[in-house]
Length: 156
Length: 127
Image (tube, one colour):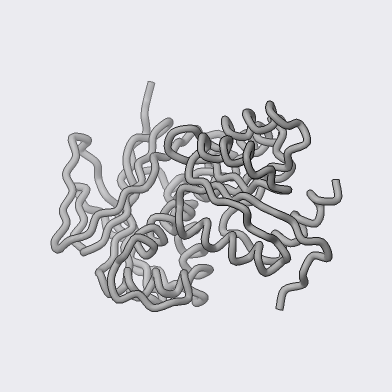
């Protein structure tokens, strides 16, 4: 994966999560996994096409998801209802869209798919694309999240 | 407290995200707006614009079915005086230029701040 398109994604995630939670976000050490997978309870997935193929996943546990939706809406959620799930999809969408806009202004041509959200224990994702996944841990006021970036350049 | 615009204005909010609509409506109400409708797709927006004739439409771009840019074109095609402000997470230059060329009065990048929204509404109502 090329650092020139990874960095804007990480910067956008740190900035937007801080803005929506009202507190600084701490970035942990990145890890590279051979397969694209997710192991937390809530995962928002956004696909990317154009100059790249792949996806970005914002994943967190249920407690963090409830807290994050709560901070975004200034109210407490006991369950992940429609508004809470929609809020999590929106924050993931804002994170990725801002990064994509910045990259497109630099001459790339990236497009996004609408976000999808999955909930459940031990979520695991497989894909026919054999993509490496860069996992970026993010410590937020709501709790810990991972940003999983799995992208490959399309070479014509 | 936010400064309220002297004159009330009616608005239609178009976004498939409940969170985005809720957030925008809250800010617009604080700055003197009066919501007349909500729409969740471009098609829905075109129909609601025809029946409600709001002073301003706040239009998302990426939505299922008819997207915001296509809805903008239809609304402007029906009513050249329509005030449509695009509100999107996407903000690359070509997209913004395309929206403005097709008749949008302004372009706001999410997340929306109270101050910038009040300023933009004031500007759009004045022109």
